[in-house]
Amino acid sequence: MSKSSEISGFYKLSTDERLEIVKDFADLEDEEVSLLKKTGALDLGKADKMIENVIGTLELPLGIAVNFRINEKDYLIPMAIEEPSVVAAASNAAKMARDKGGFETESTPPHMIGQIQVTNLDDIGEAKKAIEENKEEILELANEQDPVLIKLGGGAEDLELREIETQRGPMLIIHLIIDTRDAMGANVVNTMAEAVAPMIERITGGRVYLRIVSNLATHRLARAKAVFSKEALGGEEVVDGILEAYAFAAADPYRCTTHNKGVMNGIISLALATGNDTRALESGAHSYSAIEGNYKPLTKWEKDEEGNLVGEIEVPVAVGIIGGATKVNPIARISLKILGVESARELGEVMAALGLAQNLAALRALSAEGIQKGHMRLHARNVATTAGAEGELADKVVNRLIEEGQINVERAKEILNELTKK
Image (cartoon, rainbow, N blue to C red; front, side, top):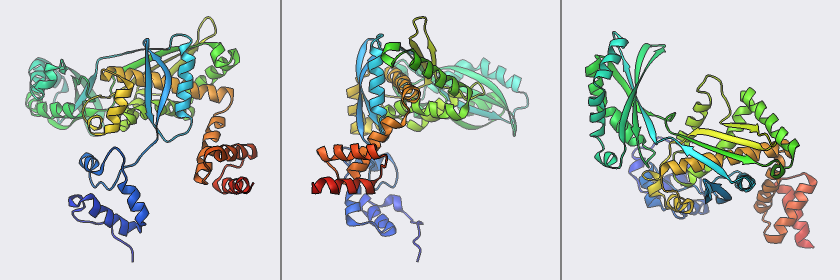
């Protein structure tokens, strides 16, 4: 008989009671249930308050990217990621950047956009005029929702009006521009947008439907730049190979998607380590890449007069160092302490530098030696560990797997048995 997932009141149960139901549904072993209960720093009590229907936590490796020098300050960068070679690649790229002074970064103020959708307007031009005439009253009402943010120097600062054509007819979209200071800001943006919606309906005579934050944070950008000497990269041929790879990405969306994925390997791993919203960052970055109509690289690469490689990146960074999971998850708090950033803007700039470093490392590997070389060694080590190899035996199993070009668990077990007998 098939089992039903229709469970009434699941959210009301304790984590142990939920686990018992899941155990029965999925035929879990006692050992598997014990692993779900073993949560590390984020205990079940805290996890149960973060999301719904909690039964455990999921751990990822937390590594440290070294060698980063950004705006004449040194950083150790925490990165939470499951993919081999990413942390090592970022560290290597940062080391190469140090020869020319490291990374230079800058950012815009932490301004987020709250979108208010106004429909059923008889005259959009008149509605725009009415909004402009009542702009100060709208901003004042928005700022009444969060006096603490105002004391910290943030708050609603401006309005932008956009007329768009849709399949449901023309709409007026009002952007409420809010300085969220050191928070990512989604909650305060949504609160302010909802608060002013009735006033906007009254002023325009229209009907407001959506009033919500936009994750395309075009007013909250971080930029990074670095020079990589041709000697550090491996010569002029390598520089030219990187530029050829970049030209490919700039011209072809199929290649560009993977190009930008490499950038986000760095940005998202730091976001995850610090408890930031990875989905907002990911969607915002890819939308920004296509904002002019064609999907383009987040980075830009060119050669200077001396033949060195110059890289730049501009990316939206809706991140925070207060609130949300950054406050609740103890590992996120420790990661922020390791990083040593003092503001959300600084965190965003570090992310931009990390994304640029990650992109450089990937382009160099692709053009100079092929991306699989580094990946395969780390993959072979994972396979050897899965087969039960440890210490020096693991190193020997890895070497044999790579020499043979046959990297799978069954072969690793066979090699391990041979070595153990010897």
